[in-house]
Amino acid sequence: MKNTLTRKKTLENMMNLIFTICGFISVAFVIVITVFLIISGAPAIGEIGIFKFLFGKVWSSTSANPSYGILPFILTSVYGTLGAVVIGVPIGILCAVYISKIARKKESAIIRSAVELLSGIPSVIYGLVGMIIIVPFVREAFDLPDGANLFSAIIVLTIMILPSVISVSETALNAVPKEYEEASLALGATKTETVFKVSVPAAKSGILASVVLGIGRAIGEAMAVMMVSGNVPNMPSLFSSVRFLTTAVASEMSYASGLQREALFSIALVLFVFILIINLFLNLVVKRKEH
Amino acid sequence: MKSISFRRKLYEIIMKALIYIAVGIIVLSFVGLIGYILYRGIPFVSWDLLSTKPSLIRGTVGILPNILNTLYIIIMTLIIVLPIGVGSAIYLNEYAKNKRIVKIIELATETLSGIPSIIYGLVGMLIFVQFFSLGTSLIAGSLTLVIMNLPTIIRTTQESLKTVPNSYREGSLALGSGKWHMIRSVVLPSSIEGIVTGCILSVGRIVGESAALLFTAGMANEIISIIHAPLANNAGSTLSVALYMYAKERGEFDIAFGIAVILLVLTFIINFAAKLAAKKINK
Image (spheres, rainbow over the protein chains, first blue to last red):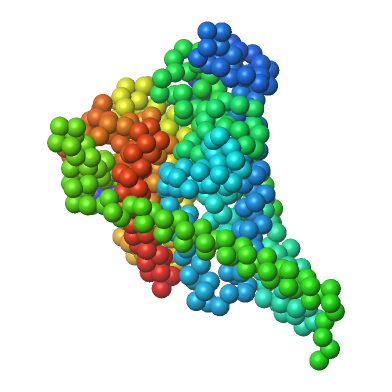
């Protein structure tokens, strides 16, 4: 009897330990990822010089006299993300308003499933369709020698961030208390006025979270933009071929060596810092909502 | 009834028009995207495509190796990530007493879920391919995806653990079972649907993943037997990676669209399954 009891206690303690280890594994992963990125990314930044690396305007990693400036990539990522957010967020919010407040139950169920399906479609498919439809279209419409440019990338990114913007905004709009809207309607406001002057402002922290989520998704997207952006390290302008932070890492990784390879890890480190800042911001926004 | 002023009427009309335009854009891009992929891809989906491997001698361009690799990676990833993720959720919900620690772990999990897949690909290459010298291999790819999918499994399991009534736990403990026995026999069985949902979502993410696998699992198109799949240095591309390769590197768009149709069907099935599981939880 006593024997089984001690055995039971050992088992309990063991399971306790196992679950504790499992619990801390995500913390361990975050630390490992950070450490590996810093160890492999920092030396090249030191060698090139942080100022020259971050603000250098020329990236020519394979030339005889190589220079490693990633300002073009940083600006391209920022412009591309901003472009996608500026176009995508209004469309996404309006669509969320429709699903949440205006559409009949059946309509909103259909659109919601379509949005869910869009969010599940692999990014390479967006890239493929962008390559075949959007790139030639942009070339024809603006009479350019090549349609693979920042503008095409922005269009593809816009479509890719729409599902997350819509679904998070919709959740936020659904959570607005009915009384707010009823009060507004009772005071004589029309349905549309109520939606835009009462519901949307009341859901603004959730909507802001959806925007930040969209930014995170756009800045981290690699494969789809790789297929439509032309992948040339130019300083960004709307109709020139460009390279993003993500695609800079992906496009040269397979053949890079030496300092060039280390510089790619440094780019990843810069991207990681961007993402951490966005995450931090998202956390602050969400936390404020909870209070 | 007094009608509203002209300005308010104009506002009403403009806003409504904008809403319908936005919805129109969504519907149009949805229908256009799906329709175009089906239109371009369906003619190239054939039994030959699904059942052969690429071979210059026989003149076949099948994707059987890619289908198998996708399956292997899904299975290996889930086998590893499930126990860890479920265990982590159990710790957070059942064992952890210190709120501060829970906060830290949840922050770490959120950070993991926000990291873009290209960074996972790079870190996976550094850790698994080089540091643990697994080489470019299916197992290195799977381990990378384990880290990527951990947040999904933790979150869905945790959500369903939260719905298990405390009275179940108290009843079990009052009957004399230890904590582990209580979790095994009462808590876990009542939260199985959440775990299943997590698995389905993870499968969706694995099927669609390409950037994280490019440098970890490689681009080979050879058939690997199930015995060799978990061994080091057995590289292979999944369907998504193969699509990227055919479209971007080789310009063979017909095969790319054929794969796209298959991926689309898979996405559809996974979405449907996830919805079904979610419905079951809500019941």
